[in-house]
Length: 201
Figure 1 (tube, rainbow, N blue to C red):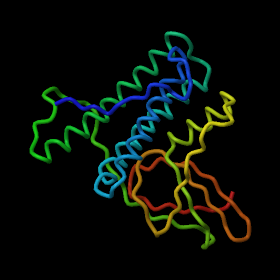
Figure 2 (figure 1 turned 120 degrees about the vertical axis):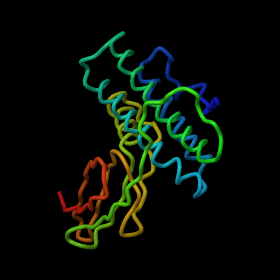
Figure 3 (figure 1 turned 90 degrees about the horizontal axis):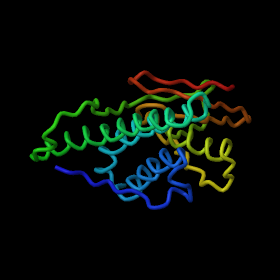
């Protein structure tokens, strides 16, 4: 079985020799899947997969931002992350195929299948409005606007928390605002159902 996830011809005008084009192309693939596989039955499968992919994208950007790895060594590090992204897609799509009675891949895959966690969220004091965004999307936006200076790079959408809990996995950023003007901004790696409580900065 061969999976065709597509690609982008122009990674936001970046030269293909520019290392940043690698995470940008992966992020565009993620955004394309989110846009065209947005029905509830699709999101149940894709949300945990794409969040794990975005964790790898954030890892790419962290390596680039550090400035300690350059040239061929940098491309090697990004290539390893790209391979892990392909393993994430393949492992999870293989499992989906087998659940639907299809054979899936004949070769072994090494990536752990993604899981979502229903996490209870609250604020202390109560009354804070919570929004969140996956770590990969936010890291890419910060990198492109602050490090690369592309001030017109599209700002990703933060999602409002409309219930007492949300289904999440991996690295996420949370922004909280209280009626009195207090704010909080937290980066959290979701690895379990452990409840989260946010307090003002």
